[in-house]
Image 1 (cartoon, rainbow, N blue to C red):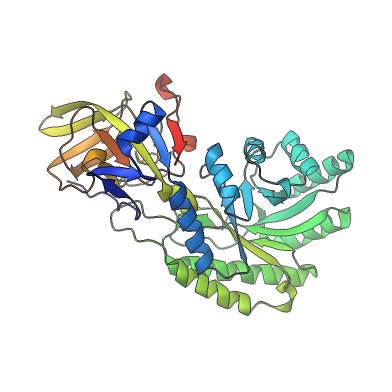
Image 2 (image 1 turned 180 degrees about the horizontal axis):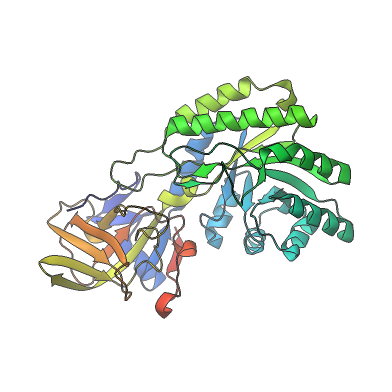
Amino acid sequence: MKKTGPIPDGYVAIDGELAIGGMTASALVDRAGDTPLFVYSADHARRRVADLRAAMPQRLAIHYAMKGNPFPPVLELMNGLVDGFDIASGGELELALAAGVQATKISFAGPGKRDRELERAIALGVTLNCESEGEVERAIIIGAKLGVTPRLAVRINPSFDLKGSGMKMGGGAKQFGVDAERVPTLVKRIIASGAEYCGFHIYAGSQSLKVDAIIQMQAQTIALVAELTDTIGVSPPHVNLGGGFGIPYFPGDRPVDIVAVGGALGEAFDALPSSLSDTHFCIELGRYLVGEAGVYLTRIVDRKVSHGEVFLITDGGLHHQLAASGNFGTVIRRNYPVAIAHKFGAEPEEVASIVGCLCTPLDKLSDQAHLPRANVGDLVAIFCAGAYGASASPANFLGQGPAQEILV
C-alpha cells in the first residue's frame, strides 16, 4: 500500500458524494455530457487570491502565469482577480486578449520568441521580458519598422536558484534570461535606443514548499536588483520577483505559509534603498492560484485482478494528467490526492491501482492506494488538477483526444 497526497481544503460531500461548486461529481459529468472531465472551482480560485492579497504587502501586485491553466473561462475569471498576466507565447497572447485582458497588463517571457510574436506584442504595447541581447536588438528593429516604441524589460539569469524548487529556472548556464553581469550593458543599450525601459524579470524556480527558501530567494532577488540599479544608474520602473510558491501534491507535503512569506517581504520592502522607492513589484503565480481549484473526473470502465492486485481501469489517463502519472519531471513516482467520488470521505476497504486506458505501463494515475471499494461506472477524482493538466499533457496520444473542461 502506498499513501496518497492530501486532498486540498474546501472540498465537501453532498449525500456522500464529492461536490465541487455546489454540484455533485455525477451532476457535473451529466452537465458536461461525458468523462473524462476537468472541473475548476471559481470559488476556490477567488479564495486563494483573496488569502494571498491579505498575506502579502499591499505594495505587491499579483500576476497570473497563464501557462498554469489557459482555459478561456479561467482566464476570464482571473482577469477580474489579478493585476497582470504573464505569458510565454504568441498563442497565449491571443488567448489572453480574447479573455478581455488589456495588452498593457501583459508581460511576455520565453527564450524563443519569433519575430512575428515580437511584432504583434510590440504593436499592442505588451511588455517584453527579453531573454537575450539578440532578442533586444530584434525588438528595437521591429519597433522602428512599426513606428512603435517597444516596452522592454530584461529577464535576468541570477547566480542563485530557488532551493527546494521542483524546477530550477536560475543559477548556472540556462536558456532563460541574461547572465546578471551582462545586464547593465544591455539595459543601457535599451535606454540609448529610445525604447521604453520597463525593468527586470527574475524567475529562479517553481513549486517550492520551503518557506525559508522562498524568503531567501526573494531577498536575494531584491539585493540583486539594488546592485544592478546602482551600476546602471537608472531605477527600474517594474520588477517581477517571479513565483515559486508550490502546492501540496504528495504524502507529507505541507502548504506554504504565505503569512510568513508576506511578512518577510514586507520587511524587505520597508528596507528598500532609495533607488527602488518608486519601483513597482509583482509576483507571478500560476499553479499556486489555480492548481488546487481543479479536479479531474474519470470513470471506471473495468475492474480486474492480476496476480492478486486490483486494477481500476478508467477512461482517462496520462494523456490528460501527465503529472499525476509521474511522467512530468518527477524523479520518484508518488501518488496525487485521489478519491472515489461517490464515496467521498468513506473509510478505505481495499488496495487498488488506478490506471488509464492507454497501451503503456506508464499510464498509472494512482499506485496501490488504500481506497473505498470501487466498481465499474464509479467516478475517480484526481485532485490538484487545476494546473499543468489539460494543457500540459499529450491529449492526442493514441488518438484519445482532449478531456472536457468546465468552470463552476
